[in-house]
Every structure is written in C-alpha cells, then in structure tokens.
Image 1 (tube, each protein chain N blue to C red):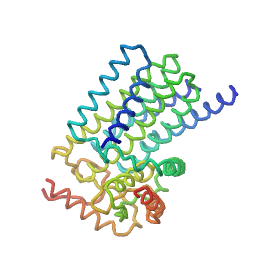
Image 2: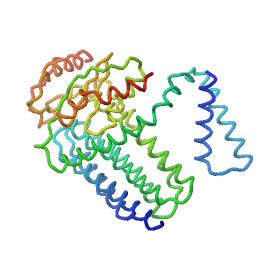
Image 3: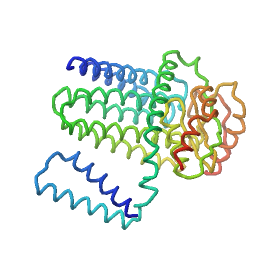
Image 4: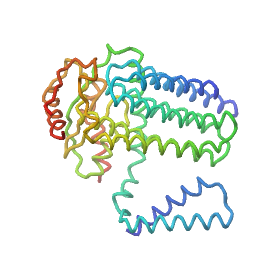
Length: 157
Length: 101
Length: 121
C-alpha cells in the first residue's frame, strides 16, 4: 500500500512537471496541492493497489516491450503489404484460442498485446478463452504456436 | 519533409472521411471517425513544428483524450438495442444472418 | 552529426506518411468492417509512432521531447482499447465478419455469437 502510494506520487509529479514547464514557487506549490488532492481522492476511491500500480511487473517488462515492438513492426510490414496486394490475398479468420495465463493482469496483457499487433484483434475474453479476428489465417497459427503466450506467462511470476 | 508529411496526413484524413460518408454500417462510420481523430492528433503535432509553435502539443494531448472518450461514450450508448445491426441495411452482406427478435 | 539527425528524422517522417496513406487506402479497399479495423490499427501503431519519432528527432527542447513521448504512449494505450471495444460492440450487435472459406469450426463460433446477440435483445 505504501509502495503504491509513493509510486503514484512520483508518476503524478513527473506528469505535472513535464506538462507545466514553469518552475516558480507559486506554480510549484499549486502543483503539489493538486497532486495531494488527487492522492486523497484516489485513497477515498480505494484504487491505489496492486491492480492499478502493477509494480511487480517492472523487472521483466522492458525485455517484453522490446520483443513486442519488434513483433509490431513485423506485423505492420505484413499488413501494409496485404493492403497493396488487395482483397484477394487476405484470408480473414475468426477463432477461439485457449490462453494459459492465471491472473487477470496476465490475461489483459496478452489480450492487449494481440490487439496492439496489427492484423489480429481480440474481440472477447471469457474465462480462459479469447476470440480473435485475424486478417490472415497464418497469424492465428503463429498465435497458437504460443510464443507470445509463453512470454506473457513469464511476466506473471 | 515536415510539409510533405502534413500533406500525407491530409490525404489519409480525406480517405477516412470518404469511408465515413459512404460506410455501409454504423461501425464503419465510428471507425472512420476514430481514425480521423488519431490523424488529427498527428496533424496538430506536425503543424506545431511547421509553424514553429511547440505549444500546439498540449492541444494534441487534450485532443487524443477527447477522441478516446468520445469513441468509448458512443459505443457504451450502442449497447442499447437501438443500434442492433440488421442485415437488411447492408447490401453487401451475403451470409444469411437473420435473427429472431 | 546535424545532417545525420536530419536525414534519419526525414526518413522516419517518410515511412510514417507512407504507412498512414496505406492505412487510408486500406480502409477504402478492404471488404468488410473487421478487416478495415486492421488497416486502422496500422495507422495507429507504426504510422503514428514513426511520425512522432521523426518529430522527436527534430525537437531541441527537452519538454517538447517529453510531450511527444507522452502523445506516443497515449496513442499506443488508446489504439488497442478502441479497436477492442469497437469489435466487441459490433460482434455483440450481430454484425458478422466475412470469412474466407477454408477456415474450420467457424460455423460453431458464428452460431454461438448469434446466440449471445439474440439473448441480449
């Protein structure tokens, strides 16, 4: 609880300082007051917890982001190629896929990574199954091969 | 290069507007509006650099948030039955998807 | 050094513009709503990312750089959320995607989503 409050305070302070750009005493005091107000309100709403500040992810998330950026660029090149090739070259597919994540956070990270990669969109997430719409049938097959699934599962621990 | 990129964004926005006007379903129109909003954010940032006024970036941040909230709001409203998609309104849908109401 | 930065930012802006125009072409060319959604996804990730990275290389002020990073993060957060919400609303309201013929088990899935659509009415 204490760690999450501190991390929320640091995030808000960085956001405020980068957006403001004026550093006179009065403005800084007003900024501190607004940060404290936001902290108070979020304590009242009881949203400062493990779910809104997933600090345990920070160890492994950087490597995952780098891998995800590489995947996004590769998928983008594929989709742009198929835009120029026209509608005969695509094979749209709607399919249910089983996922192996246990926690809600892991499921949401996996579903969002699929949506962020162009060519595949998560439509629904029910218990341990997701419905995915893909532009190409081979995207579904590469999802079923489970490279992304395995990397997200590594993040969970 | 900045001016060329601005013109390219204008072209993309025009294409999105054409889809928004002609789109056969309600969801195509929302998709086009969403893309138009994303392109507007990029356009404002580029114009800030073309005109030499980086203050435009603040407006771009606010516009991104407004765009997000408006799309979510319209789609929350679409959960009510008024937006139920019926195949009769779309001419190109050849699959038999009649539903019993 | 100056010229290297100028050339690389120009290259990033060019790639971004090309991808954005391709996305615009895609939204006109693709046959149905769900495939058009993928075209919009392209402009939301690589198009916006490349143009904003190009602008980051142009910027001299640190605050301007930080704001561009913020816009990029917001775009990357917003883009999957809107496409997921849009697709979910469309499927639950009974808009069926056109699928290619060689996919298996699509009929059972269609049946099921049709049931959810009709149970909501």
